[in-house]
Image (cartoon, rainbow, N blue to C red; front, side, top):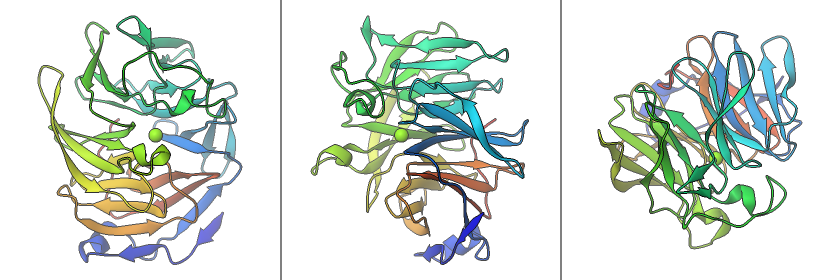
Length: 305
Ligand code: MG
């Protein structure tokens, strides 16, 4: 374990209450090419994440270190778990969203919309009603590095919802450059969606938007809550008080629900994603370029299970 000193940038005094000033950022592993999609398994006490270009998923267990969780991941990117604890994954290589069943078999949840293939599902969240929401930018079909080069078949990069009763895949919102990370507010009335379009367009967005979640499965509103800089928001998470924790080029940023920057946790590599884990969900696991980092915080994550 390597400790990374000088970890905090306190922009607002409220950030002291959300962090543990004596807790340092720890590097847990550094053998990835592009680390993404951390997901915590509290029942097993381990973290799983993606190493996209190496087409594998890794697992970190305290005291036991890192092992290969899945050797051929189909260039998997973001993950979450549904209310039954099953792993739900976005796969670039197969351009689909899948669920891993308890026996290890894989069920395809979405690979098309309107008869045409998805772009390359990127990140995914599950609402308490069982609906599954995912983003579909083109990162995984732009080259053969994080997937297979291919042509978009959809007319844009959308946020989709998978209906829990019928399995139908519908567009929930369609006005994005590159929709990326998603996170529900604690009461699930809002869905935050990151747009990381700046990554491939100097004039592109680098912000997080807040959508009102309609009972009909549609998203409304979509006001920009915060522009993340430097870099782009990729993965995002909410804590139990509704604060938004976002990846950025220089680390993890923490914003109030209104978008005020409270502070930063500095990470020495560009951060792609994060999740709250550990038995009390008070430990941030951060995937950042080659490495997996973690740091204990003074709040806990809202994401269930
Ligand atoms: Mg992402």
